[in-house]
Image 1 (cartoon, rainbow, N blue to C red):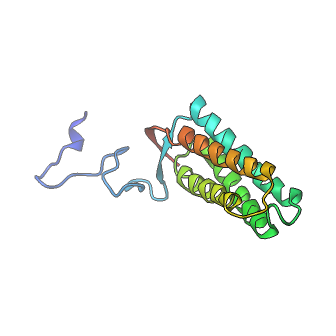
Image 2 (cartoon, helix red, strand yellow):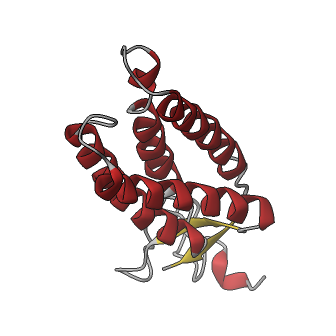
Image 3 (cartoon, one colour):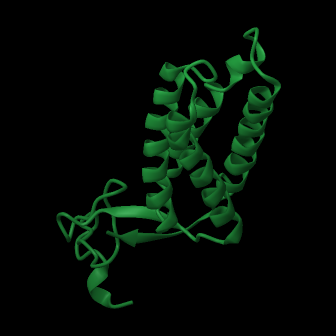
Length: 157
């Protein structure tokens, strides 16, 4: 360390280049530079992202595959919108950013919950109930895999 980073007068700490002594997420020496936490995307996290991405594609495809009754069009449209949003966050998380993981998990859980009424409504075919159960289980597995993302470094963006 060089001597110029120590205060000349007690209580007077000069700004250190490359060290952020400010509010998290900003840089005092480089305006416009934002520090965002990133994570290492290992095989487990990638597997979870692939699984959640496939569920998102299935949500979008459900809009074209519905007969109007199982699932109802309203649920199919909601699922498709959630699927598109989920795919956006999967793509963002794939690059190593940690910030899209929380909204991705929220969207996938809400999407899985749209399948839950299949267990409580009468006259739902067994195949639809099996699909709803698979969606719930696969969403839980994907959420567990993705939620194990460790924070390893801060990178300037």
